[in-house]
Image 1: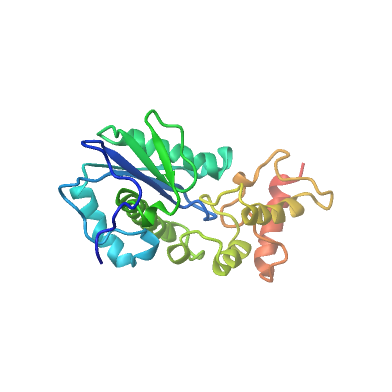
Image 2: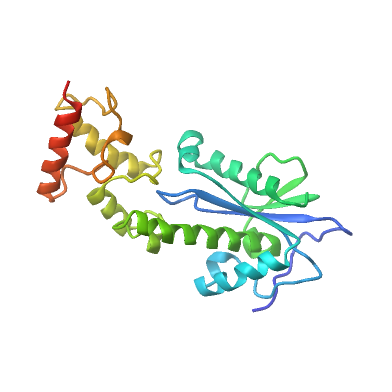
Length: 253
């Protein structure tokens, strides 16, 4: 695979250009991860491309090369709580700001993958499909993707049963089925529709038929992690009895 060429923007003189990209806007769980990279024109990296177009093995191989050859790089994030408070768009912009701010070298210009840029203290430009067009953005996409994928592997060990290592938190049929069966865990984004739906199942039970919401003296976060959001229509009757007993014990005035 040959080195990508920037087809529309060429740095002028000694101008330092940072590429920025994100991974994890669409998943139902986990942080959104961003990266900023300033490449060294004297140390080109063969094989850079959009991280989604590379195999996992190739991304892993490029990860330390980018870190070693780039003039500067930084990986940042916005946590689940920030996503739920701000919404995913604003949380992503925040994570991008953190990535640029974390660079040990201040860039003269920032190129951001997508159709919008966060507010930055230097000139910035969005680049549609930038991870396939601009090497620095491609490098950033690889750093962000590998970092988040590694974290999802770790989350699989902490929250088994959801298949997080395979789908990385995205709303696949496997993940949605596990969400209905196992309920909502600590890293799920409660502002996302399928997660809200899973929590609503608990709210119906807690309402004792009145439609009231968990939170009158309790909250979904206070429920046992293994049953938060478990849907009462699930055929696992034993689990439903356990959940109903817990709710009566802790939520009955």
